Length: 436
Length: 112
Image (cartoon, rainbow over all chains, first blue to last red; front, top):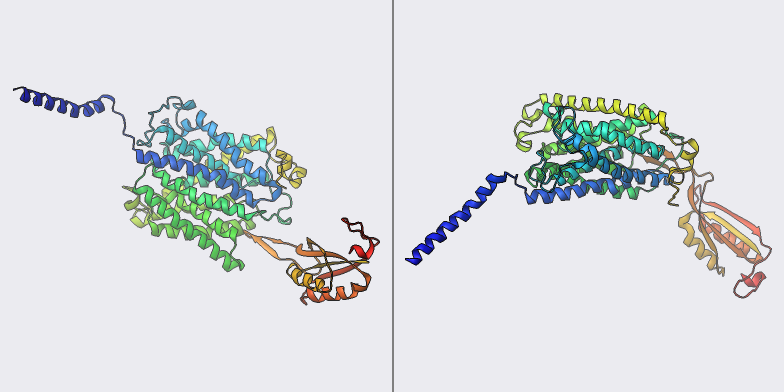
């Protein structure tokens, strides 16, 4: 008698225990965080941060003259710090909280409300703290890329003002338009990891800066050869490895999309590096180290918008095209039009970003990108036009806003160093330091 | 005593050193220098921007020798450093007033 009653009680208890989880879920309806996704996104964040410090810092640093190397790496480092704080204060909110088609809201002003358990609806399986920091690293590298265009002649104070204003007025809105729920995303523009938001944006801003600031003294006559290409190779390599976080991390999950994004990134980069190398070898007689690393970066840039939508064959073509076109843009186009884009921010990032964004419209396939995300080869030629619109809107806003910001700062404090400072070197004049 | 100064192509340094030591010369000073004469430099190209580098790397040696040895030393040096191409370099001979060995205080040709 007792035994039967005991087992009945046990059975009841067991059933009760089984019901508990169901009751708990119903009670607080929390989204389920995925530890795999979270682990990968934590890693990706670190990788993308590394792309700027020290990746980009060294890539650019090696390419300038020795008297300006510290000033150049300072720009990447200082931008990292400045944008971090601005992101925390306001630009994350403006980019990635719901608002309207043009700008986000103030819901996360000072990251208000982003507690331990907070989640952004744009990436439901990871903590918002991770998503916010991940996106921050993109907000950091975009303005840092622009520094390549005005290397060796911009005042540090003007740089800080410029970067601060640009982060708020140009980056945050465009990020919102494409990724944060704004109108470009709604139009169907495909930009997986930032062909428009990061590269076209930085490239066009760079071109505007190069034109507004003017050429370096002695451009075309003086020897402005890179002072240490080994630094540039190290930087380019860090960029390449870090870019896995940039593209595969844009899956915001540890899944098949991330895997394919990593694969196509690798393929496009190598193809572009070889393409630039062979193009240079054939036209100028020698394959250069600067050429092959520049080609790799061009490939990385071009595959960025496409990385979640194309298959390996598409990636191979994108890489080859980017390598050749960016080689032409950084050498011939620049010479033809006569602007001094010191480190080819426009030639590699602007042009490469545009090539990549347009080819995304060609090579996107549903089998990779998911339903509705397809381009020309998958029967949806209209995607090419959509991509073009996305590019043009980005370029227009970026160009106009960048121009206005520059002019305002120029009037207020002046953009450029004096001729004497420029000739003597920025390191000693702006920062009181040299690398002897 | 005379100082023989020679500026010549860096890859010839070992040959020149051997030629001089085989004459009994016991020491010399070497510097890495840059310069140009009638040899034009190389052209470097970085992303399409060409730079004519007019200073070429050279090596300079300075060796102080006893008067009696100078002619043979110069001859040996020229033979060793020569490549018959433009840019081979030059040899200069200076008179030396005095020479002193720091460790012992010896002077004149005994210091050499």
